[in-house]
Image (cartoon, rainbow, N blue to C red; front, side, top):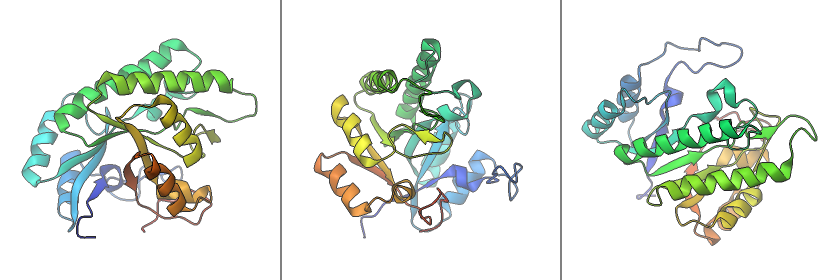
Length: 242
């Protein structure tokens, strides 16, 4: 446990809104203030964040300097694909090729900034890449597009690690790659040294996975690049304290 490295997602340090209290349950904090709050927590040595919402083209240099001053590493840097309404029917699997390209372009731009931030990993969370009704999507085409775009993202900068964070539902009724098995199938098909998995424990729990087995399967292929630690009652992604 002495070598355990802990990082913090700065999205949890803001107003923490939900669909019931959209303005949030507490006053919001600026992004620099969130950096400083995370740095004040004993044992936390890293930060996780999104582009272009929390981190922008205008502030990323200043935020990297602040992280350095605080002695904090940038651990996860993620393209915030799922918050744009234009991607409501898919990011990398959208049936519109122009929107698929826009999603890939955003991932590539995020990669450029991740290099400046010296980010350990970048996360692809499928989120809107899914469906709400049976027969709503062509599953074969969706998987083709998903593999094509993930491979292109990995190839854009082979030195930058990219991980898939799987989840079964929310925001879509069903999300592609809902389990460790689905995830590892795609990771092994794409077969890039810089492409692996982020196991979010809460996401594994809601699919009734045995966490030890999921980690063992992923580690068998050397693909466990990152983890997210949280808890729930195996019904919903509550993101409770471990």
